[in-house]
Length: 255
Image (cartoon, rainbow, N blue to C red):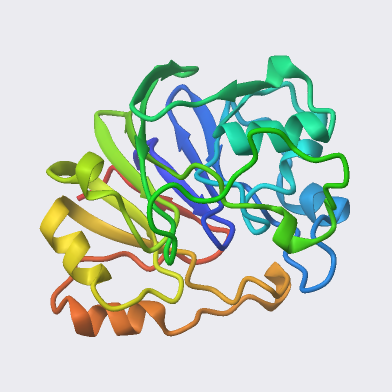
């Protein structure tokens, strides 16, 4: 068995393990239809320190567990200006924040190479609404307060593999067109007409790994998949994909 593996926590929450360490993308596990952040749920599922955390965007179903995670572990969040400004408003230490810019190339702990690519959130054209500064009356408990902000996709090189993570069912053709990767880990929540064509036109991948196609307003104990991947299979006949089981490691370095 190889060393490169991924664990899915629902939505676009991913843990990636490799020979030299472990990191996370969008680790949100609280998952409740009323209360955004539940510390007991975080403690239940996120039990080890990630070497670093990548964040695709600042919506309520991606970012709100991060202040608590950073208070538990001495690690760094790599995220947008909007996401970092929200974290600052929640008293996260500056030393644990790295404000990304589009096109930034990073060499991160464990010899993991990351390019932070400009991306798009489904249903949002151009630059999404974000926070240059967070207002004093920001309501952390209200989902609409967690604006999308600048949206990133991550091209990751680890264990001689190239992984591309897109957190929502849209992309920025200008920055993603022509990319080749071994595994495309892609959010497909409620994808709309034209999205399958965007994938086929712009990205060459060996294996497609869907994310963000679960009913994420329910706790992980009540996890179930929606029909997003079934629809995508009809739109892209013969798509080579892996359906990740929830909360189980899946090897990424096997043929």
